[in-house]
Image (cartoon, rainbow, N blue to C red):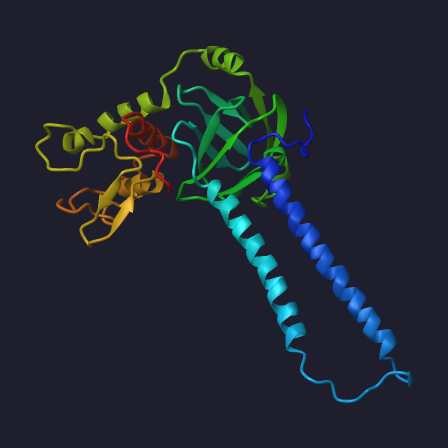
Length: 311
C-alpha cells in the first residue's frame, strides 16, 4: 500500500504548496517576534545604564510597516486558500458519480452500474470522481491523506467530495471523526486502476441493476409516477433533468436543485414548494431508506440536466 504522504490526486500538490507557504510565513513571523523580544529583553534590562530611556517620539513609518506588511501577507494567503477551497466544491461535469453510505463502522460504496464495495473503493486513474455521501447514524468523516481530501458525512443530508487520482496503487482510507467505540476500525483503502483495468473490474462479477435502475423501480413502486410522469392526472413538477437546474419557489426564492434539495423534497415536501404547484405531496419519511433516496437521486441524474452547476 502506498504511503499516506504520497501526492496522489490532482489537488495534493497545490494543498501541500499552500501548507508549506503558511508554515514558512508563520515560522518567519514567530522567529522574528522571538528575536525582537529577546533583543529588547537584553538591551532594556534593569540596570543597563548605556540605554537612553527618554520619551520616544511617534514613528509613523514603522507603525505602518508592521501593520500593513503582515496584513498584505495574510490577505494573500487567505485569497490563495479561498481559491483552492472553492475548487474542491466545483466538480467537473464529467465526474464519475459514486454513492457513499457511512455507518458504524464501515463504508458502503456503490458504483453507477450497481456494483457495491465495503471499505474499499476502486477508481480509474485520471478520471474525476464525485462522491455523494450520507450517514445512517453518527457523524463520520471521509479522509484520504494521500489525496489531501477530507469531508464530514452527516446524517440527514448529503455532502459531496471530488478528486482525480494521479497515481496507480492503493491508498489508506480513514474515518477522521470520532464516531463510536469502534471508530478506529473504520478504515479501508482506495484502489486506483488504469482506465482499461477499471472498466474490466467494473463489469466483472454478478450482474445487478444499476443504482439508477433501482431508483426508477422505486419511483414506480412508491407511486411517484402517478403525479410526476408525463401525462399524469395530478399536476406535479417534471423530474427529468432536475439535478443542477435552477428552481423558482412559491415564496419567491430560487435555488439550484442538488442532492439535498431532492432529499428534502421527498422527506419534507412542504419545505420548498415549487412556484405554480399546490403543496399536496405527502412526506415519504419512514417509507424510504437511504438506499432508496440515493437510487432516486441516481435516476434523476441519469435523465440529464446541468449537473455540473456549483452547489
